[in-house]
Length: 589
Image (cartoon, rainbow, N blue to C red; front, side, top):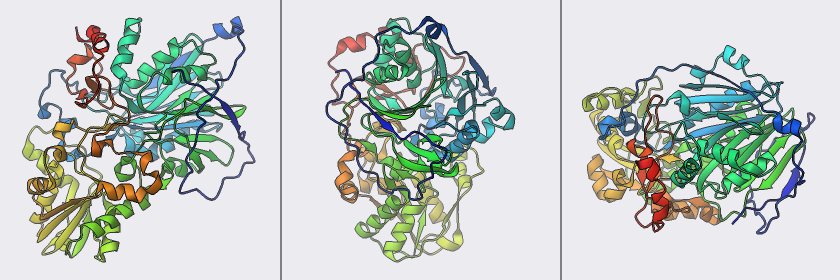
């Protein structure tokens, strides 16, 4: 069914606008009307002078030198960057930023991306619009501080900018996959930065290729650009609406044109996206509020599920993308992804994690002498556990932030040593003690077993693992990089079997029922698919593209030939539409 839309004017940015000193800890749910009307536009064709004008694109980027990864790799050892035991955690794909109305937009975008660096460390980019209405882009492989310097930022003038930090899965993080993407089409140019994952990517791409589209990457974002370019809707932001009607899955995106900044969030609201304002009236969008804090922008509210926000010289307009169902926000944002100082989905991440630890102390108590955390993501939950249990919290593991990834070493023995390089046990805290160690999650269990061994080698008398999330039994298809279900230890073993595999003296997870009880009336608004296997948006294809991009520079071929890029869809899905799979023959042959 076609989406409908309505407009409501929001306050126009004003230089005299003062920041709100109170940042709300809990935002009210946004109830969109069930029936909405699309705005009507003049049926007159645009004048020739407007249609003839196209914005030119200038590109500037780093020149990375990376080893190419062969496409015939089969085993976990062949994909060390993805199967590396030292990074046995779910990974967020990326973070996005958008800024309108500040003369230092690129520098503010650069700082905001610094604040979102935890959401992606393998590539970064910024697109701005200069005084000639030209979209300019600087992208590169590496950390934000490695991609940008003073001279690079000088190439990005203007008061309108979007930015992106990314994480990729199988294959190298090559330059062509780094966002924001910029593309020209009949009526101008558009830049886009995307966070999320589409479950109908293959079908959309096959349809577009049947109609003549040519793809350069495996990115969802490229599909979105093609859908916008082929849309017949007017004006531009209705092209975005038209494109998003065809998308299934998770997406939080920011777009930039020669005079507009557009933010959009999928109808389920899987991935976060917030709006703030600086004291000079500049409007800011970001994946987390921690980015707003760094650039002194005041948090106003979330971009609501199913909403498109258009910012231009006339102010901010809210467009309803479509009547949205019950929100299904990713609970892992509170468990692991977001920084503790962020407010995500209207809740303080720090407070959520602290309560997770308190629940573990209440429901899984154990006699112990000290509580420690697996840094950094387990620290706040460990503080909550210690406070509730009345046991001192100490730093029993020290994390080195200066060690690079160790996956380049081919030997398993070296990889074990890499864990020791990253996590150093403190013998004075552990020796002879009964230790509770709190971590945020267990994925494959390989890192947890090594941590237990480290602690016992440092003299711990007992090691009791407490995990501040329920067991992960299913893959995520909505923007979180998780292994296939077969690789998830909680999908193959019960708690006692996991305990024996890890080697700890006791093991307890945060009960799912207790997590839902904590969330109260908002519990139905969160997605628990990775804990339950019940997917709000069921994949309709036999295989679903992994999060991120897995086509390297210099490698070309069918998508099916690239191993490690696909995740098997749930077995209970509806795959009776054989004709849809048949459309992919052009990709497979």
